[in-house]
Length: 445
Image 1: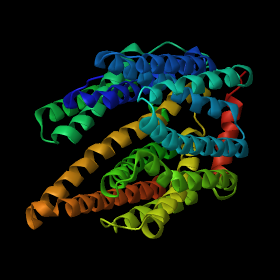
Image 2: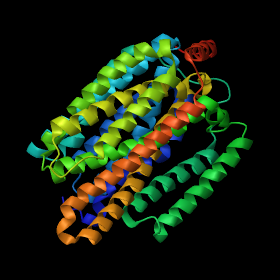
Image 3: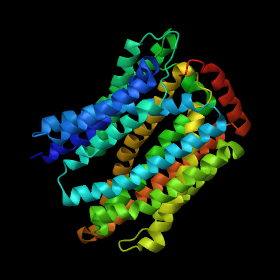
């Protein structure tokens, strides 16, 4: 299939726009229609969209399929998190559940890195989409008999104006970050979409404050622990993009690793993440989230600072591997309690939309990270080549990575400061929040 360089970006952008834009609406649909039902619809729809993309014969069909994947993903992701929230109400059980969720995510990432490399190198790109079909069908077969249905009761009227404002604002914001990464922050189209996003999202907040049935009740965001957790998620997501984005470039561009070898290089990161997530889930009820998240943020910051020492011929074993493991441990220590602090104490009526906020902040943070760090990288590279001459471009590329890693470390450190200042729930508070939530969840089942 022939896709021009100018249009190739839409393979990614079509997904990120629909996924990021529809998350809040998807979370509220899960609350009202039924979280299990929406979870299953998301799985089947994602499989169908993957099939459409896998057999696409032209660029338009492929882009449409990616957009549909994002839309069904926006149903699937908040439904999955909210099912954990309403199913596991005991603090210890929920901590274990989020730990298992994090570990499984790590396993999926590890398998995806290797499988993606294998499929890319030895088969057609179509199989990177078609492989989703059996995975989704297996998940459906397991969820049907095991997962219990739950949904909100009481006022379940949809907030259509709020949905339009939120979806339009988030789509504009994600696209503005995309254009900032491609065309620069001062480009007219970038500034235009940022302006549209600001108008729509401010309008959304004003409307939600006055609505009797808001899409996103402001109490979900303005709660100190949840608000701090959401802000932490944005900054941490932006900072971690430095590692995922530029280490991949470094592996394949500078060290000339194949896609498979790049995937293998990330395996220690995935394994360390899995093991730490399991351990953290057991420790969380005993030590509380604030201390665990603070330590995790400091470790992740240290790992990113370690990567600023990269050279054009750095050793994987002595420099890259330790940094990846330290960051994996730090990320797990943050993300396991982050799910808890983001959702503990939220009313059962709002579990889906609160879960959607977790996904939305991660999506916005990732888009912000790509835009900011790409700008930092290209500026640092251009400055280095100007100072040292065109022949220094390979060294300039690595210099650009190092500067981007430095900014990433600052973003992660800022997220850690937010945790320290805003997240106040101790282990006792977490348990109390879980108890209050258990009392509210009388409609589960």
